[in-house]
Length: 259
Ligand code: ADP
Ligand code: MG
Image (cartoon, rainbow, N blue to C red; front, side, top):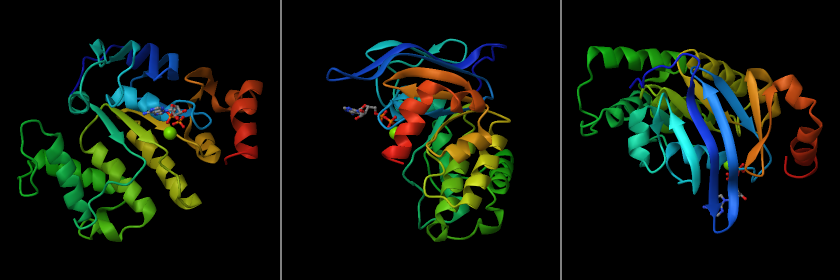
């Protein structure tokens, strides 16, 4: 679904957003926005509020204050997850959710059926020619055309992640939310995932949460650093990497502690 493009406007805009978990502010007056068809990477130490940011946009968590505007003027606050997905915001979760016993192609068909409003999701639902084309194009771009007829359960970890990205792609979301896509991937898989997301971002906006700095350096145009529920700094990856505050709260700490 298209939500009225606004040239120069933002596809998503969070204004003074606070998420309060019994007094603890996971997001604290956060201001964040991104452009149409932008590929943005959000980094930050554990607990910074990265996943909560995605939860707020996708409607899983309701902010206690602030506005979340999608497209020209759709306020997402108070809307349910299904409704937000139907507006054109897709989310790929960290944990795999492919159906292992279904074929690769069937997983995509199911994702497509689920996204068609008013259509009861069944595997036997007939796809239109246009849908079939979209599905084949997606299989091609995630590099799984050759495995379309194999069980998804037999795919490698990386391939499963790509299938899931494909499942969000066929739903034709205008904004894609992706949480730590390269966790557990080999260097080669990481490289391929970067290319895949760059391709996706040619047609839609992609917001990626990521820990892996190698990956961030590879794909990032603009990086947003979250810290304690707010934006610590934002800019090109070179600027971010040489920023004293970032080294202190993120890079330094992750080297010593959790990375
Ligand atoms: P990140 O993804 O950056 O690691 P999160 O957004 O998951 O961080 O969490 C931010 C902070 O909010 C963390 O301190 C986490 O413990 C806390 N938090 C997240 N979800 C909840 C919840 N449902 N209830 C209470 N605290 C939460
Ligand atoms: Mg997280």
